Image (cartoon, rainbow over all chains, first blue to last red; front, top):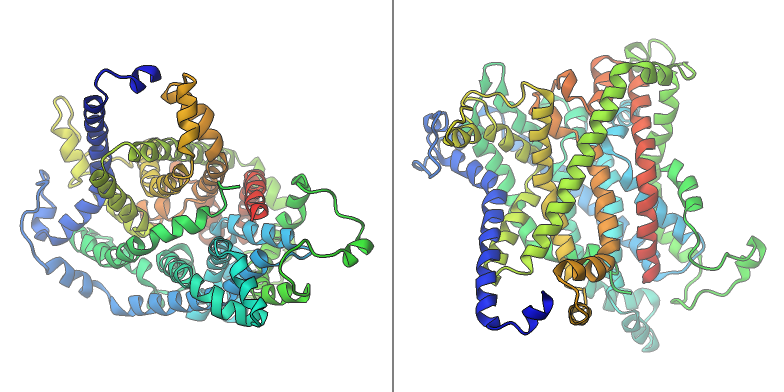
Length: 286
Length: 330
């Protein structure tokens, strides 16, 4: 079979025809994967009465911003968003500083116990968050941090920090050690070499990791639900306000979902390529 | 994670020659890495380890102690001290028939999600190598969009898609001849409802797998594939004997992560069922949550959580080996 492919009678035509087949399959993937996103946006802009048509139209039926207005009215919107911003930004700031130091240690130094540290940091990532919710709840309760943004920030570090360390390690590994050594030969101190050589090269990685960590913190639901009261809820929990005893208001809910998802998805689109590179660094090569 | 700290390294066969006895080791020269005393890396690590010990170490220890205690409302508010319960929490849980149903359901659910995610992810990653450039861009944009969607948003959207009266899915399927699904409630039965939730989980998980495998696929040397083809291997043969072995580390990593994430599925079930999953929707995570925060038995809830963690440890050990190998390479 492969022999015919190589010495095929008309390889060029064969190739275009097979491309067409693959593209059709690709189109199917595109439509299936994209449909939920499309339907969310479509419903968000639809007049609310069109949203509850038992025979819904697949194409947009008209554009209205009423659902967005309703979504902003349903419960305080900016409060939860503001709280989510404070939490996510703080988590990222702490995570990046602490994580960069740790990532440097495990990627640039050989020391006894390095392996155990790596295993430990990775193992932390493995514990399902849900398993920890009970003791974390009790811990914050004891510390008087229940229903406080600071308590949520501390808690989020659990999953942001290991991720930050591991990803930054991937980026640091990709910076040739020789550059640092050259700078040190030229008279730079170790710290100087890092600040002048490694840090600038690491900047894109730091940006990508920060954005990614921000998104993770922003998206977290369980702890936000459990550790914060109704008055202090964050953006993800806010989205639950559309379901009441009287049913779900789907059109405004989709408007709310769109407002929450679009900025995050755009951020995500900007950094995901960098992230994939960082995550897989050294996974195949060598 | 204190348990894994001590157990996992033991399971990992040392890839390097065994270290010399401790006394000798201190004087051993560093392995040709950049200079710097042993104090420097530890100083760099200290803040990270400190934070993790507080936010992770302490609660983990507490999880273990809690699971051996009788701990309810009155203990929570401090009216009564926590009493030791011995193994009562565990025996109660293990003797409960419902618990075993939940375990089996969770494993089936997680296994199904992982298998679908990995197979679909691999197929789409391979497909992306064969489609035209513009199609590749289109698919990538859509994948990243669904990947970046907050889980809670995705769950909300799926709830809407599958709504019994106004959901687009029922409307579309009912257009097929002989299908009448208007008003069909997908969540009336556990298996059907969980299948919908599995679809949601897979939809959200596939992009990460595709993009990571895609990054891996670009690193498979073309010459190797060509050589295999010249040797008479078909597409399957090339995939089986060239691509797969090279991607193995990534596949192991992705599978393990998927197992961990899919065993930990919570918001999807919780939100889909309006905060009160019915008995046939309970997975280990929601079950543990229920025991703790609905029944107010924190001890038993912790016991269930601990059993979940132990179930995962086996998988984690596999993952650790892989990550260590990656850490070794550089």
